[in-house]
Image 1: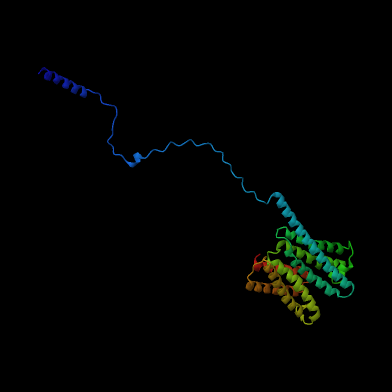
Image 2: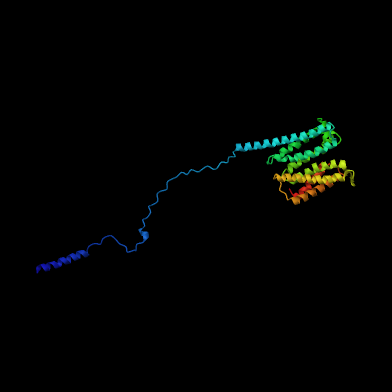
Length: 313
């Protein structure tokens, strides 16, 4: 009986002790779990090491200053060699007609006109052998410049060259070298310096002066019995031949330079323009102005003006 009484408070005490126990510090959350929370976090990034980047040097062109100088030297030598070759050819041409005239194998008047025709055409035909640089035209001008000095020296009687005088003058007088022949080489220099290979104007002007005017004199002397009414020193045969041969030589030179790639022309319009230039040059050559203005000045300058007004370059 006493044992049952004593056990009652004991159970009560244990119960009190249980409720007085301090709760633990662990806390739980009732938030739902997601797949992102289960994914492990990546490790913190490592510090970036200091890297020294090696940059490649820029591409160096193989055209070094020494190579550029070498190329320029080669170009100069080419143009100088071309000028020397053309000068030698021009001298040989004049010397050949000097020889023929001195041996009386050819008339002086015919020799003079053949030199007049062939010298200018030979000079024009030689332009493509020079380089494509801007300075090439100056080397080409050395050829007529040397002839210019030669004419001045012999025209002033500072030296004597009977063969030269007979081959390029009408009456065999040294002072004649300072008129027509001198104007002739000045026009050669002018056309080469200003127009060169890139313009049809210089080619047409020289073709009219060299080919047209030169052949007109030869044909007119032989078949020029029918004179022009306003100028008894000119003939219909000479004027007609100047128009035809001036036109044909101009077209031929333009065709050659077009094939070589220097000119790009509309040939229908070009033929019409060259025909008009030939007509105007023929009229100017037939005028009685030889005593005032030499044909070697009037014909090429008028041809130059008309051709430039139509071609524009």
